Length: 217
Image (cartoon, rainbow, N blue to C red):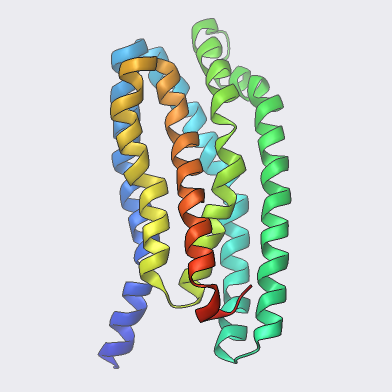
């Protein structure tokens, strides 16, 4: 057993651990906030949207996990040109898929809300309104998820964890505690899109800050 390699591998995967841990906390905050604002119907609505988010973001997560070994291999072998090509293709693909997922969520949100809400018109109305705002998060989350996986593939667990921590816990927690006080339920729906947008700004900065070191651009 090589303890150094084991510790390094565990630390490199810390972003994925942060993601799983933060999900429990933010879900609790979402439910508690919606219970105060809109009661049980509000909790039902946020549950529908959060589960829909899990389903749709699996496209980003699955792609990012699938392409990570290719990034790692080309970086480790020193094949800079192939690394640049792979990263460029990935960002183009993620951008295109993000737009498609956003449009699907925006226009299919009403149908999804109806499937889960059934005959409960109050839950349907809350969920429909929430989807209209929440859909914008899919424009930003794809690049954030891929960028985090990219840094993990490059053995930079610290930077990967920074991205995941902010998008899944840091920013969301702050906005969930602040926005509803001024915007009520609208603040809850805005929490994730705003968090993803700010995280994307940081992600772009990190991508360009590390470009000379990893030579992926």
